[in-house]
Structure formats: structure tokens, C-alpha cells
Amino acid sequence: MNMKTKDKILEVALRQFNELGADQVSIRTIANELQISAGNLCYHFKNTDAIIFQLYLNLAEEMGKMVEVVQHPDTDIAQMIEETELTFSIMYKYRFLMLDFIAITRRISELREHFRQIIRLRQQQLREGIENLVSKGLMHKEWAPDMYNHLVLHSMMVADAWIPNAEVHFDEKGEPIVRFYSQMMFSMLVPFLTESGLAQYHKALEDRPEWQAGLRFGASF
Image (cartoon, rainbow, N blue to C red; front, side, top):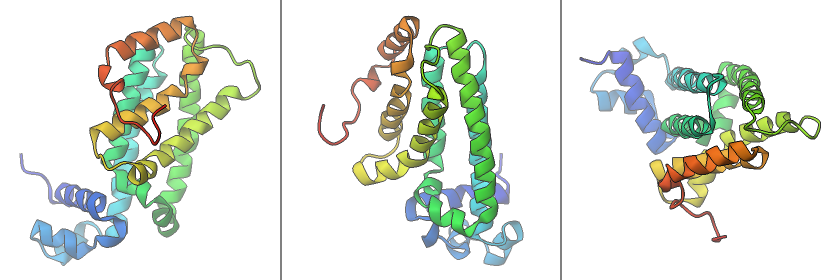
């Protein structure tokens, strides 16, 4: 099946943005690779900011599907781990957004406002996911005010920062990076797991030996 021109533009643009950075990609560089005129490309997207915004919307849509799984009442620890890694894989697919996020949000106000709305929704959805695990006896009930609200905020901060962090500290690319930071993200939940939750967690790790033989950050602990 032939891809539509608009989809081809997005595919090539995404690769160029990831490889070169948002500021180094232009309508002309994308058009040249596609072997179409700049005018033809601008018929679909008036400038690179319009392409960036559409790629961001694609990311938000793909991420939304993953969060829906976390909210499902039958979700267990193994599924949470799997969805965390899948979510990080999606984020890595669009990694240029987080690498250049400050410059992008300063330039594209519509994207910034949409992102703020999405984050508020994600906070609510993750809080519901935690409450689901508490109700199933896999996580402890809160023993301090706003404990899980703060955990959700910490998770959001890690989600925003892990790709720039990886770019600075690792030469590796792709799956090893996704796996390492997925593990770091999920490890934030471990202190809050009950005995039943920990049993599921250890079983999930046994089924994912690649998590035990991953990257090491800085000094080996």
C-alpha cells in the first residue's frame, strides 16, 4: 500500500528531527529527501512548526492508548511494567520533541497549551491507576498526605527528563536506553508495593531477564 504524501512527509521529518535536531531541519531538507518541491510540501504543512505540531499530536494519541491500559481494573504489576516499557518506546520514537522541548514550546504556544492540558489528564489517569492497584491489595494505602499525588508528579518529571538525560550520559541508542529508563521509572513504585505486589514484581523480573543485565548509570552500585 502506498503511503499518502502527508504520511511520507511526517515519516521523513520525524527521522530528520531525531537525527539532526529540530533547528537543523527545514522544509527544503525534507522536500529534497522526498524528491518533491518545497511548494508541494507546503501544500500539506505550511512550515516545520506545523509538522512538529502534528508529530506531537501523533505522540499524544499513541501515549493515550497506553495510559488507558493502566486504568483498566484488571491490570496487574506485570502489565504495568510492560506498558511502561511500551510507553517509553513511543516516547523514544519521537525523542526530538523532548530533546528540544523548551525551544519548541517557546515557539509553538499551541503545543505548549495542549501539552499542559494533556499532563493534567495524565496525572488524573495515573492517580486512578494507583488507586486501582491499592484496591487490589498490590500497593499500600497512603500513609502520608498527598503521598501518591507527589509520586505522580515525580513520575511526570522523570517522563519529561529521561530522554535528555540519556543523551548526556549514554552512547547507546534505542532499546537498551528504553529498557533502562523504563526500569528506573517503574522502580519508583516498588517501595509502595505490598507483599502481593512485590511477589508479582519479582515474578515479572524473572520473566524479563534483560532488565537484570542492562546498562549501568555512572558508578556501579
